[in-house]
Length: 472
Image (cartoon, rainbow, N blue to C red):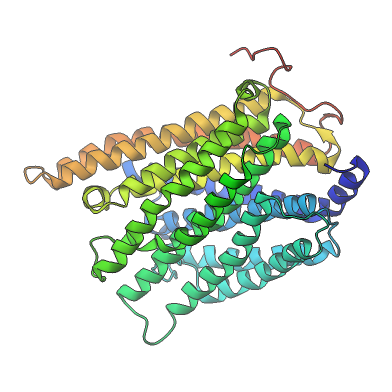
């Protein structure tokens, strides 16, 4: 640890860009919520908004995934990464306007990309739907942000680097490589058909398994020890987990194309990498659990711990499900079902977003000078996100299993398969409504904080005083 005055100076230097990234990420989260709800309704009520070409399912769904991933998730992740790097490297941010300019470029490119998707002008490649021009603008903006973030690391006065810094630097260097390479690859004259799909699958898997996962794990490795006031259990375990993550995460992309017309060894390599990632899953899970040992009561008191620990548990679940679903015998049943969307939401929402929510609850008071206004609003946000998100993911998982088994049944007609799936989609919409309510409360609470309408700075806003179990 280091003097409070130094921490305050570092926080002050990050205030402008981090608030910019958080505020804009919140707007993208609101849009993602609306698009996700529309897409969910259309799966059981196909005539809903069917007369508006811009809002048909084939356009709404890719728009939703891009808004959620590149809007909410990436911008909020950049904000958290900048704040963590400044804190952990003990370096003040210079020329914050450069970071804000980078964020503007990113969002101009993304906005153009989302409009293109809704107008029916996407590339047609999953996770690479945005046009090349949009991707180029986003990369220019990202370059400014990443360069400044890496400069923080270069000027660090804290040595050796914390495990959180390892993950953040890996994420910052890995993302532009995969994003740029995948977008460039499908433009090359010799790259078409299956090879394009392979590039898209590689980019999608790297986005979730490296970019988002690295930022969320860096955040969890910082917040859990910080809030409970004890060091991470084992840096040796953390080191083993990190290098396993670096070696194998980027090789898992071809599992998305299992059974497709690509060389069998490519898929086998990805399946093997997925299995070897079990080392990473175990080391991270054991490390975080043992760090929390004796402090599980903090889940009843600290909003940051509650959200972050929920995300950590979701990471374990998502990793294990991802491992088993990568096996050919399992994938052949689940491949063309909603199970794939369940996995995406497990990583992007239940794991990543919940950890980032916890980070925002921790970071924002240190930037605006007051504490969150209401523990009840935080609690409502948690239950909307946890129950609603958990219910949605569970429905997608069971829907995928039921639909896959029905498709594998030679006696079942396609209509019968759709009837099985339709029941689940109605429940999915109910779950989305709960998530939307949680996001609405979170957005309002966030706005109050920006307006400095909160409790005076001092003691953090807790669910219940330390030593008193929260009443439900």
